[in-house]
Length: 416
Image (tube, rainbow, N blue to C red):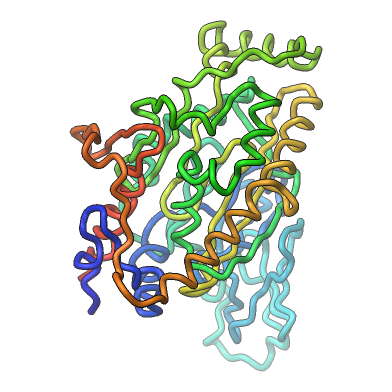
């Protein structure tokens, strides 16, 4: 068995962790099929019968709100001959019918009708052939997580200190809730899944190089010049949280006032926030950019959207971008968020296409000979380490990536 610990040596990461198919198979078993994995948001399934089709690793899953109002996650597999019972990406139904032999199931999972039932004897009892639920399903602030494993820590324990940062982006809404029904942008890239969280959470470092045009345009629009952060790096921005979670916390970087007077929608939004949270908290929430956060292993919030990572193989990954709309705000505010999302992260945006290209180039490069070790040592000498094992670093440090790999090593070796 591969000793993953030997391939992760502090700030040095062995290239085989991105390219070895055996490592990928072990990741599926030790990470994706054991820990809590994000599978959807309650706003995607608001009514009884609403469902979305998702995956945990290679395992297809249906997340559905049953006619009883309960949110469930089922393995997307007919109990008869194993075909997927749900092929639509989303929809509303009272009954899932397998297209292979017509077996049907209620949206609560119960088997309704095994076709041509007269041909079966007493070995077929309907209560024994319901859709199989995932062993554990739980939610926090509308974010739905599931686990393929029946044992393990609770979702509350898994999220830990990350809940503080989830609360910050959820509280951008004056009513504390958001909607992910604005669309689902799908991306495939030819690279390892771990490149996505690494790249997404260190944009301050690579941004001035591959995103220079976008950073310049964003600075003109908002007054917040991210590319200038290297000139006066701020401590405690980069955060490594226990559990492999990563954060870029910009609460110390205030945004310059806009050059134009605020619109009526902006004024109404600010008033609603003050009414909901008080002037001090509303000022903190609106006076800077909400922290960027990665929840191990597959969920991110980045400025405008929820981003979900789905591993396919050692060198292929699917990514889903869902614009996050704020409940309880004027329509113009969400229109601004959607336009900003399109500008930065859309299919023809100024940021995401650059990232996809870079990650595919890295995947090619980790096959090169020579020194096998990648180096993630920026800021290691100045990390602030906390009693819980978390740490903080300066604006462009890599301590959060080191924290990710430390947690990864522990999880991967837990079953050894």
